[in-house]
Image (cartoon, rainbow, N blue to C red):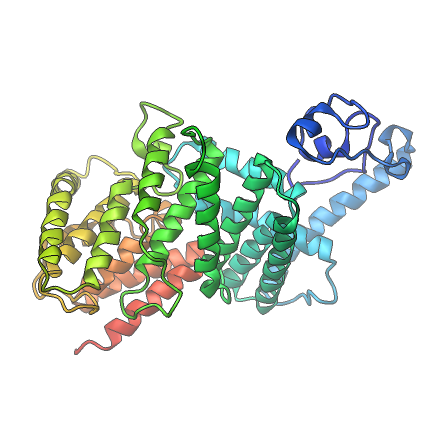
Length: 480
């Protein structure tokens, strides 16, 4: 049963401690503490007599009335969603907190969760992580409220419901408060507790991507997530491999570190808003991902639940960003640019062949990941070609004449117009933003604008809105 599914009458039997039941583990029923709780160093809690309600002792009328009450509450929650969007409901007066949380929780499961996963990856990533999150939410209130914060933020961006923005910030604050209490508890070598804390932190920084008001907190949460990864995986005595749900979490951290490190091109980040590039973190992550291939023999994207495109491409973009803010006159700069060109060339050839095949015959429908990879490669190639003649810290400039790489990028965007899977995938978000700087004509700008609008409507992430606004501010200053 998920944290937001239908609940019948409370049923407690004398078999199994509450700790094992809460975590859905088989209990050996040993008293005063079961073996599972002792080995995991958990508090073994048994129900009191007041908690021992048995459905078998309920009258038929009591049982039926309770089930009807739960069904009515579920129906009420379903009906509330469109009414909240139309601002027909005053959440502070007419809706119980329990019902509101059911509404927000259902929205996350049905509309938000799939946006976090690479749609071309193995279905197990989606199913396992979803199940683990919902189970952990029952035991970890910090995770519970951080998930609610993300869902409420998504509802706000989707429908501009002011009340949901207020609820999102309230849930976010509640999650922070509960997380600080969990961290303050005596440290125990409990892998479940470590995973719950890490996942809570992941959803705290994701809230900055989805909603408004917490974007500036993302670097702080990411720094905490990096320390947790270091303690849990990088400092381990043996070389660990990741379970599918853990792989989702780790790749999520990597992807968000990438976004924060890259920042916005039109303006430098404020003090403390950009993470410093840590080569050791990226080396450790790369080694961990290479060891963790849940589905060997399958395409890479099948084993990549968040990053999707090759890990090396993210590193190339990070190096480009570092060089973009560096002194152009040094020998090291020129050598680094040459190395980047050498790295990108094989990808350019591969992407060029894909584009030629698709344009000429259109006999092969490329996956979302393949087209997103092509945009990553094209964006990196265009940036590197401008590096030698660019000014330190300046924004990328549009090309005076149509470049073959831009032609291919525009072909992808035209082919993907109106494609729902494309519009709901996070993979093209960043390369699309980069490509927007190179577009020159009104027609080409409209092509990027339309794609941005499509993904903001379908994903409802404030991160997309930030990218789009940044591009619009740059486009508006160009001479007509």
